[in-house]
Image (cartoon, rainbow, N blue to C red; front, side, top):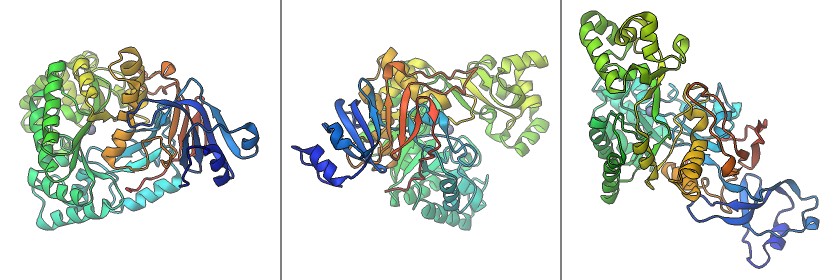
Amino acid sequence: MPVLSSCDPAERFLADYASIDVLIENGTVFDGLGNEPVTADVVIVGDTIVFVGETAFTDEELEGRIKTRIDAGGKSVAPGFIDLHSHGDPLETPEFENFLAMGVTTISLGQDGSSPETAALREWLDKVSQRGIGPNLAMLVGHGTLRTLSGTGLKPDPEPEEFESMLAMLDETLDYTFGMSTGLEYNPGLNAKSAELRALAEVVSRHDRVIMSHMRNEDDDQLEASIAELLQQGEHARVHISHLKSVFGKGRARADEILRIIDRARGSGIEITADVYPYTASYTGIGIVFPVWAKTADEFEIARRERREELAAYLRERVEKRNGPEATLLGTGPFKGKTLAELAFEHEMPFEDVLIEVIGPQGASGAYFVMNDELQSRLLQSPHVGVCSDGSPTGFHPRGHGTFAKIIEEYVVEQQVLSLTEAIRKMTSFPASVLRIRDRGTLLAGSKADVIILDPANVRALATYPEPLQLAEGFEVVIVNGEIARQDGRLTDALAGRVLLPN
Ligand SMILES: [Zn+2]
């Protein structure tokens, strides 16, 4: 990195670089760290930001040296956003335009305990690299996948050699991934006991990686216990709560209680952080409403034969508690766009019978309107809570196409519950620090050139529940590794993203 003298940066600069790939002039530049923005130019050479400040180049000096020149006067310039919890298959939809269109330049996959089912995750990542990818990818290895690959499967207690195999696979994979995810509300992860999770946390700690957890239970009355379980692992390794939410909890005061748990743990030296998405409906497999004894196909068949009444009563109570069948909007297959209440009406049977006879625990995914806006908005205000989409290019929930735009449109511009500076920090340097991505998430000389240009007043999250696949607007230029990935609403053919390695 050349050292820039403060008196004649431009002159010095031109001596060092025969050519400049991108010059962004006169933007309002946010560094991502939470400092107030400054009016400045941003100079990109190759994949790196080499200068931020007043360049004062004359046209003559620039003559023949500059490939792309962008006037960002009146616009905001920021580091590209980093999504702490994303979904999708880069071999199927490598462009990930849904993410780029809302300013996301790095996604993280392998979430909720589930990564591609191959012991050689490195080979899968190589394939992703070769295929090309729009945004960068920070990969996690799934705890549930380790259980499957080791032969532990659904057993509560792995055999000793299975356990050794899980530990060894984790140890090997963490060399080139950013952490381990758990999905303790899903099979097979939900079968794991605390001793297993602690032992795995030891391995994560040795690599200075993070455990990202879809916790055991997000119901309001189970939240404290779920966080306590994660904090046990936090005694060993850094821990992170994915899509922090209270299912059917309400109000700001309840959010403050939850945040106090996090603050207290941090005060005692546990490195715990969290992310949220800005919607009041969750989205996952319908299995979420089925009891632990009827989630797999086999368990479900047995339950249907031998415990049908009990199963129906469980489903009735659980769905009612989750705001009823009107608040369950299915998003897949023949049920797409219909609520559970509508299906019950169509089939002329109680909704719990629809769940048992028509859908089943693996039969659909859906959106569940189970959250309270006051509570979730309050969570977002904590400095230790960042943003995730939990979305994908194809998921039938607006979060996959709207999240990062909605944060700016609603929380910054309309409601003003976050300043633009803080919102950008939450979506850039904060997630970079959670994942320990050291050269991204900031707009500084020396950082990798993931840069976005936006006019906050024009940012729109257009995705809705009925039309969840509409791209966001207002992110005028999205640069990934120094290349323009999307501009004026159009994808380029750059596929400039990279599979990131911990650094
Ligand atoms: Zn999840």
